[in-house]
Each structure stands twice: as C-alpha cells, then as structure tokens.
Length: 189
Ligand SMILES: [Zn+2]
Image (cartoon, rainbow, N blue to C red; front, side, top):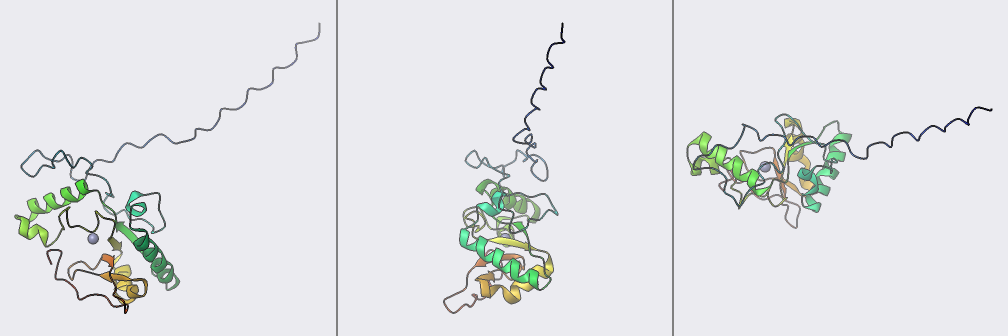
C-alpha cells in the first residue's frame, strides 16, 4: 500500500493582533492617601495625562492622549514649531499636555500638601477648574533649550509663555498682531 499522502502543515498560528495590555502605571507617589485632600468620587481618573518622571513625548506621538486630547490648533502649532526648531538643531519634547480633571486635582492636592496652603499651591499649580491642561489648551515643553527656543520663536506659531515662573508652559495666545500677552507672575494670576 502506498503511504498516506502527507498531511499538509497546519497554517501557522496567526499573529496576535494586539500585544497584551500593559498594567496601568501606578500614580506617582503611590496610592492617594485617605486624608482630607483625597480626591472625591466625581474625579476618578487620576492618571489621565500622567507621564513617569523624566519621560517626554515627541510632539508627533499622537497615540498618547496627552497629545491626542489637545486642542487641534495647539497640537498643530507645537508640531509646526517642532519642525522649525529641529531645522535649527533644537529638539522640542512634550512632558505634559492634556490632563484629566482628576489628575490635575491630584497635582493640586499634592502641591497643597507640599507648600502648606491652597494659596501657596495655587501659585505653582492651577486647580482643576481653571487649568488649561484639563481643557487641552496648554503644553509643557522640555528640555530648557526648547523652552528658550519657543520663548524666542513661538510667537510665529501662536505659542506664548504665559507665567513668568513657568518657562516650560505654553498656550496659543497671540493677539491679532501676533504678539504674546504680558507675562502673568504665576498660575495664581
Ligand atoms: Zn503647564
């Protein structure tokens, strides 16, 4: 008897379509302590827009909500500025953009803890109801050379430093003549 025909090889395993989900990064500083500054039930997303310390994004990494949730005009301006800066040897990186309201609340609460009062904290971190990060209308740029480049050249793209004590924080803020508004001393105005 002839041997049975060879069994055709089974098709190779299809590639997994998606990598396994990475575990959600823990919030910096560990779990939110249960103290009077605890975030309320209304603000459950305390990590939206969080990046680990020292991690920055390319302005073109729109897979991250830090960039994809930005105001589209602001995102375009930062990308245009990044191209122009790159042509002059300056690398523009984003270390914060859109933040969830809960994350901004956590930043603010941490600042209250660290600086001792709501008034002191408000000079350094905007509250969740006024932060332009929560509405996708602000970006924080690194490194310092990129901040300096944007302070000198950002106007061409509509980008302005807003607070004297935050050289990294930029918003679309030029007027009809392409000028930036006078600097505010800090986030408390
Ligand atoms: Zn900022």
